[in-house]
Image (cartoon, rainbow over all chains, first blue to last red; front, side, top):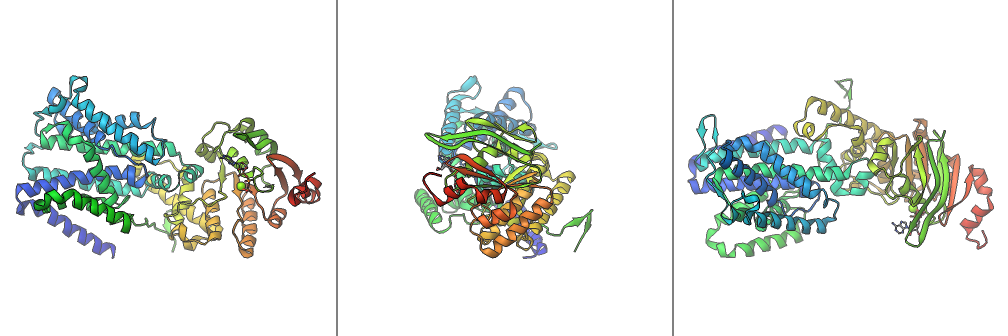
Length: 320
Length: 254
Ligand SMILES: Nc1ncnc2c1ncn2[C@@H]1O[C@H](COP(=O)(O)OP(=O)(O)OP(=O)(O)O)[C@@H](O)[C@H]1O
Ligand SMILES: [Mg+2]
C-alpha cells in the first residue's frame, strides 16, 4: 500500500472516529473512552513487555501512583488536575526507578513474579491508607473537574476528545521512538541481551529506562483517569488491571503499536458488545488466549520490520 | 607499547581452572591467533578480555588502561569489539539494524531526542545508517541490508557479526572462530576480509581451528592447552614446536 493511500485511509478513519460521539449515546462514548485509556496503558506497557521483553505483571501499580498523585494534590492543594500531568509522570517514573533498580537484572519469570508482588503491595498499601493520605479502601473523592481554555470537561464526549488527543500523541511519539537509537536498543535487549551488551549497549541502563518511561506514561494515564472519574479507589488498580494490560499487549501483538490498539479494542470493547453473554466472558477470554498461544504466538498484528532509507547521503546531498 | 596486554590471567569455574596463568601481548596493527584443542580455554580468555567474566587473578590492559571490573559495553566503547563462537545475531531484526547495534555506542541521542526526533538526532541517525551501510558494503552484505538476519546463510551470518563489530569503530577486533561453518570459498573471502580489516589499521585477535587460515593470516600465534599457554611465536615456530604438535596429536607426554 502506498504511503499516500495509507495517509488517506488514516485520515478517513480518524474523521469517522472523531465524529462518533455525535452518533453514540454517552454509554458507548464511555466505552470508547475506556478503550482509549487501556490503549495508552497498553502502549506504555508495550515499551516494557513488547519492546524490551521484560515481563511486568504489575503495571497497575504505576497507573495507581499517577492517579493518586493527581487526586491527592488536587484535593489538598487545588492544583488543576491536568497541570499535574508532568508531576504524575515524575512520581510514577521515580517509583519505578526505585523499585526496578534492585530487581531489573532478574530473569523473565522471576521478574514477572516480583512485579506481581509489587502491584499487590501498592494496592494493599493504598487500602491501608498509607501515610494517612490515600483514603483507605474508600479512596479519594471530590477531584475537581479539569478545564481546558475555560471549558470545563464534564461529559463523556468532552473526555473522549481529551483521551483521543492523548492517544494520538502517544502513538506519534512512540512511533518516533521506535525509529531511534533508544527504540532499537530496547529491541536488541529483547532479542539477545548478551549480544547487545557485547555490541556496546548498556543493557542495564536500557532495561531501567524502558521501565521508567513505561511507568511514567502509565502515571499520566492515571492522572487522566482520576480527572475523568473524580473519584478513585484501590479497586481500580487490582492485579486484574495488570493482567488486562498484559493481555492487550500479548494478544494484539508485542512490540506493535497497531497490535496494541487492536488488542485494547478487542479486550475492552468486545465484552461490551456481548453483554448478554457476560457470564461466559472469562470462558471466551480464556479460550481466545489459548487459541492465540497455539496458532499465532506473535499476536494478531505482530510488528513489521522497520524500513530505512538506504540511499547514502554525501555531505547532505542525495546520491542515487 | 602493545595495544592489549594480558598478564598472569587465571579463571576458575568451580574446581576447573579454565585459564591458568596466561600472559601475552597483542601489538598494535598485528593479527594474532589464539589456538588450542577443544576446551583449552580460548573462548574464556575472550570472555575475560571483554568483561563477560572477571578473572580470579591477573591483569588485562588496553592502551595502558586496566579493563578489570569494567562492564562489557564500556570495554566496547573503549575500542574492543568481538564476535561470538556460536552466532549471536538479533535474529528477528534486519541486517542493517544488526549493524546499527554496533553503531549505538558511537551515537549520543538520549531518550528525549529519540522521542522527539530533534534535528541533531536526525542528522546522527542518518550518519549512523550511512556508516552501517558502509560496513555492510565492506563485508559484502550491502544487498542484504533489508533482510532479516536469520534468513542469511551461515557464512553470511558470520560476516554480519563482523560488520556489527566494525560498527563500533574498534581499535581491536576479537573474532571467535570466524571461519566456523564456512565452506572453502567463504573461508578464502574471510582471509581477504581480515587482511582488509588490518589494512584499515584495526588490530585483530582471533581464535580459529582452521590451521591453514591461522597460518596464512596471523603473524603471531599463542597456543593454549588445558588453560595454560604452551607456546607463542610466528607461524613457522609454532608449526615446528614439539609441544604444540604433541598437544594437537594428543600424545601423552607432550
Ligand atoms: N561458564 C562456565 N562455567 C563452567 N565451565 C565453563 C564455563 N565456560 C567455560 N567452561 C569450561 O572451561 C573450559 C574452557 O572452555 P572454553 O570455552 O574457553 O574452551 P575453548 O578453548 O573455547 O574450546 P572450543 O574450541 O571447544 O571452543 C571448558 O572445560 C569449559 O567446559
Ligand atoms: Mg571456544
